[in-house]
Image (cartoon, rainbow, N blue to C red; front, top):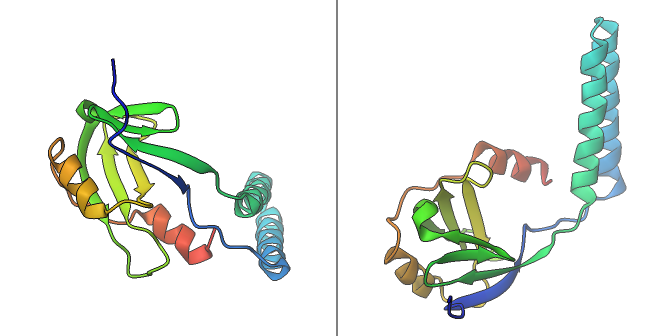
Length: 157
């Protein structure tokens, strides 16, 4: 029987930035120009893909982040109702950002095919305590920002 969590907190998936109407207009103009150009060059399928991608980006940009419950147990890390055991993890790192408005994050690389990287914001707990506890179970590894993290930050999605 699993005992209660050693650390437990709630946090948002990502930092949400409200988009103004100009952002959506710019997205629409770029998507329209790209799809018209691809149709003029005889590539109807690419035009449809550009329109579908623009709609997907607009929907994702308007979506507000969910609040998740994070917990660290003796046998692993849980996000909401999903438990990720330490045995299924490769290595971890605690990331601290230059931007003071961003909380530190626990970054974990896993063996899971569908969740190879967990990035958990640390809210309301000392990141050093979490680092010390997780380091008893996992080796520390290098965790750089991914290309997708950089692209989403660039476009503020």
